[in-house]
Length: 194
Image (tube, rainbow, N blue to C red):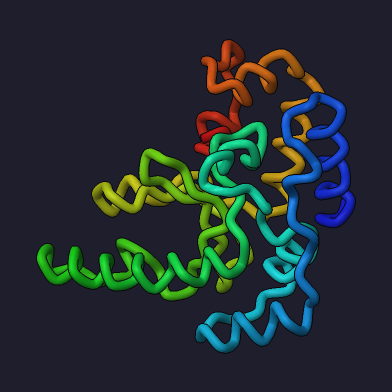
């Protein structure tokens, strides 16, 4: 399936399993506006990233119900393009500071081509890499070797989420309620369940 078809299936799974309240999903952002904002922030307007934000531009959730819209079956909070572009420069500054202290390349900590699309309370992010078109689960407060787990095309990741929810709806619901997931899963091992 295409990324668009996988995203549609993801929305349908969320509604079917009552994992995300649809009224809290923000509408997609216009591709021209998305491209302008990315270019304005010095980021490559990768077509897959534009399709992601064109599907839904994060959520309309407020601070009091921000966790109501996570990228189920993960615990990553769904970031809007505006939030992603606000977080990204901070991460690049932190990366430069950490790298200077460790005499390392800042890209080991946070790549200049990275855009966060999901954020988790524990300090990890779901990152889209505009160079590779892949996503990865990265810890922004850990050592560099722990930062890159399971880099995969976004379409593959969304397909894995859909497969998990369709095969294990009860586990998906427990994940949504922040209870433990009983089923060992390759996507969990790759860091995509969060």
